[in-house]
Length: 262
Image (cartoon, rainbow, N blue to C red; front, side, top):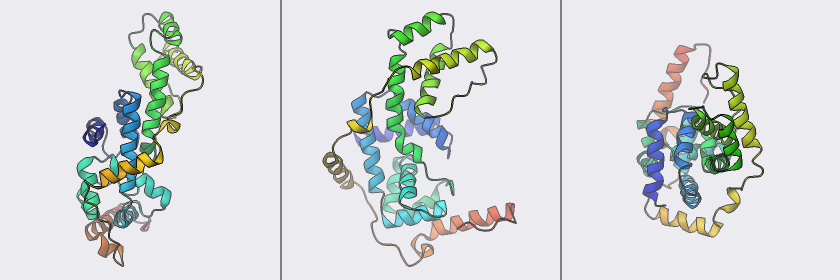
């Protein structure tokens, strides 16, 4: 997988996802990634992990502090996951000039998208569930013989496989207005749970030496501002500071009894 192919997956997902919604972006990324062969999925994650690592610069850490009202090692990792899924243009602009993030619609206090950092592993898990429920597999064959008239069966299978892979609690859909619908969804879930042990995504990733070589190759084509920050955040990232300040003032005006959260 090339870097352009990696960014194309994110671009396609962003076209489907609701802006500034991690759950929506997770759904959209999952639907793109389950289409990939396993080797391509490993490669996609390798690029995601590398781009997140390359975003570890002093000024981007300062940007994370301003955008999220604070940061830490773990929180910053989650911020870089958010940054990568904003797409190629935003990502590359932010690496070259972190203050450029002031030009986009920012989800202040909510730009730490931890679960987007795990999405490749979740899609890998979902692929295994879907495989076990294919028509030619015993579980899939039994399911279809039990519900031969259900036109929505494939849609229900895909949805419940996705929710299970994304570790979401099972809830019947709004369409489950009768007992038969509810029973169908529970049976799909039970068959997923009975598939037995699944292969571990993380243990199949390339060795650390290969990942480091990938990061060096990517870094050679990126303009990264790795300089130290100024004495204050206001001087380091003036546009982002101004945007954060305006957001806090607007929020205080809406909730006059709530103080600033910086």
